[in-house]
Each structure stands twice: as C-alpha cells, then as structure tokens.
Length: 351
Image (cartoon, rainbow, N blue to C red; front, side, top):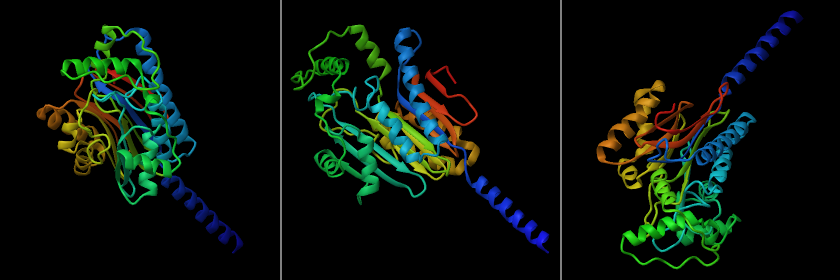
C-alpha cells in the first residue's frame, strides 16, 4: 500500500513538473533602430561597425535579461534606454530637431496579455520617454499624455528630468538647419546650453539624411512566462512643424501587442497612422494562424503600405517568432532566440 501511495505521489509530482515546464515558454526578442535608404558603400567601415556593435550590445542585453527570467516589460524598457542614450539613433540623445530648434520626443509601450498601453508625445525634458510611457500604463488611468501635462506627470513619478539641450547633437542640428533653409524658414537660435559649434561635412549630412530618413527605435520581447511587450521611442522627423506627431506614440499605428503578437514600427508616420499598421499586422496574424507571421507583416508593409506610397518597416514577434519586413533599402535590426546566436543586420540583402 505504501509503495502504491509513493508511486501515485511520484507520478503526481512528475506530472506537475511536466505541466510547469510546459507552461514555461522560450523567450525571444527583436529590435530596430530605424529604417531608410541604407545601402552598401554609403557608410565607411568604422561607422558600419559602430552601428552593428550598438545593435549587438542592445540585443544581447535584452536576451540575457530574458534568459535570467526578467519580465518583458523590464526588458523592453531597459533595451530602449540604451538606444535612447545612444546618439547614433533618433531617440533621446541624438533626436532630430523641430523647425523651432527643439527636441520633442514621443514613446509608447503596450502589454499583450491585457492589452494595457501607455504613450507620451511632445516631451522635451524627460531623459527616457519610454519610462514615462510605462508610467502612464502602470500609474495613470489614461493611455496617452502630451507635452507639459506629460512632463508634469513625469515629475510626479520621480522620473529623471533634463534640460532640452541634453539631447543636442551637432549633426542633428546641422541637418535641421539645412532643412529649414530649404523650406525658406528662418534658422532658429542655437539652444541655450548646447556645446560649442563643430564643423559637419556636407557629405556626412547627405549620408545621415539617407540612412535615417525614418528614425525611431523599437523593441518587442516575449519573456519566459509568455508575456509579450512592444515599445517604441523616437525624436520624430527633422524640421517638423506645428507640433506634428507621428505614429510612434499612437497605439495601433506604431506600437501594438496582443497575447500572441507584438509590433514596433518605423517609417513615414502619416502613412502608418492611416493604415493602423501595427494593429493591422496583428489582426492579419489572427486570421492566418501561428505560421503566418511573415505573411502578415509582408501583406501590410510590402503591399498595403507600399501601394499607398508609404516607406518604412516593422519588427515583430508572431507567436514568439522574430520577424521583420521593410520596403526601404535597409533597416537597423537585430533578433535573438534561445539556442541561436544573435542576428544583427543593416542592409536589405541580409537575412
């Protein structure tokens, strides 16, 4: 009798362990650093290596956190922090300037399990807009806050605030100056607190306009519990006017997540808003089923977006599978899943 009880208990424990193991899912992560006309030969070897190193460091940070059991929410925020602090990308430090000579930042984040979301637009003094978007999700009854109201909320939440000049980079300033001159607008005064002016080669500006025609950074992660979170952060477009807001902070356009799908977008925001690109891809995935992630992304980016005349791309997790699709010459991107080495790509002819 004791042997029978022991055997039954052993079976229950074994089955319980099997159930627990089956409930624990593999993690995955995918990210982007913007899309544009990024072609081989445009960048020198040193610049290309710097971008690849930055993407590799970001994807490894996220993957290592996920492997250690971190939540997808923590991972998306932490990885986007590194990109917001990297002047090579158009988000946080290194963000582009408006025609008035300011950096105005947007961000959003969404959790798939309950489809809760937070977003901010037009903030000028928050070091990490993605953290503010998360605070909106977790600590407010709202989904989107903007401009001074968003910054007041950031102060209430104890987030790090900085002078707008903190985000200044010379190459972004020079690009804005050239853009407003082309538009026939006056050049705004150099921001108070900005460093001394440095010379920027015209060729370097030409390259920057091509490689970062559409700047933005984004991360989609799935943790070991199966939670999917998508986040996006951007400085917008060079010399934007009238308080323009693109797709990045708009849930459904630039960021979206469901239990089985997460998308972060980069491109011509006006088109992504009109097509509701991120949510549209996840809806397509629901129709196509688990194996239809790439087809869903391509149907929206290669067909609907392209036919409308829009440019850009997305990174996506479809049932945990990293996917990307873009109709530009290149997109800064990376992915990682357990058992494989991280994938880092820039050009359109790379995997």
